Length: 442
Image (tube, rainbow, N blue to C red; front, side, top):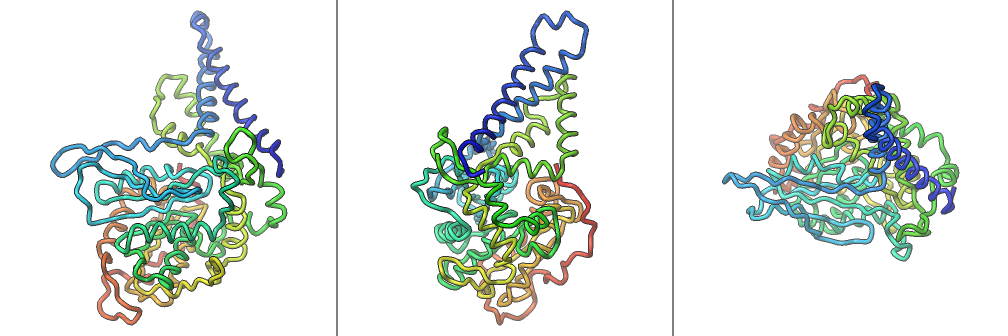
């Protein structure tokens, strides 16, 4: 599989399916077909429209398309995207609400590098912008990064996070979503050891695999079954000549997308067929609920091969974070060195990607942090995406995270701190056992 031909073949199949969809849409939409009282033509056009859009989105980076933010004086303020730090594999960007005074809350969202673009967190950003200055990590598509820029693995990722936190200063509140949670925890610990004055004010970890073995999912089962040799041979491909990263070894986004879809194949198939019926009946729209979700969900990016392989080998198989044995640039990181950064974990009761128990395991590693600065919350009915981008996030989780930030902003006690806690302890918030048979929230 590690050849350009394999990569080009996948892209050819995607392109061909988009072309077939466009052809079907055109044939079913011929004006002459309107004279034939047969719904087959309308269904053909509808199927073609949904197919063309679906496969076409897989090759495009979504725009942020952020609406203006209403201010307290009743005016709508334009959101401008600024690059704060530019790096080969990812930038630190700021959503600057023009004309607005600096906000007391400053939040850095750590977006996943797991096959989707940072725009997957668009609704998260939109929900936070009225109440905070928001920054986010904008990871680049590996196929667009020349080989001359070098490698990028889990250690490089962690060092990027360290640089981003240092750039924003100690009053920043970090929220890591899913995949980057363990590496964000490690980056914070690295700062605690080497530059404690640069540590963030708070750290919120949402649905991340701190200890993948704490609760089994299809993701962890796959990681346990496959060997690293099998994974490298079957999943890694070399970028073709059509892109700036020609020759770079990557884990293609299309492969990652196929694995995501296979986890809930029936759900996605039903959603697509219902959309075909909606288009045929004239009840669909360009920005309806289905298109808003799948335009983002189907837009995928390639990951550097070394990042993907080192994530599987060191985070999932070796459990280096869970065992507090993670090494960055030759230095063993001790998560117990975090003593004055309040940490909150958030989990979804029906999360079938990072199941309840995986993220809250972070608190067991924070041996130097008082219980009064640890908090955990579980949203019983939320799937993986619901805990950061759905109704559960907006109604329940977001207010709790903002309260957590406000309660701990600027608070820097030592590990010996005593007294009445401002937060409920982890033990108080520990969830009762839940049924984990729920499907992904779509």
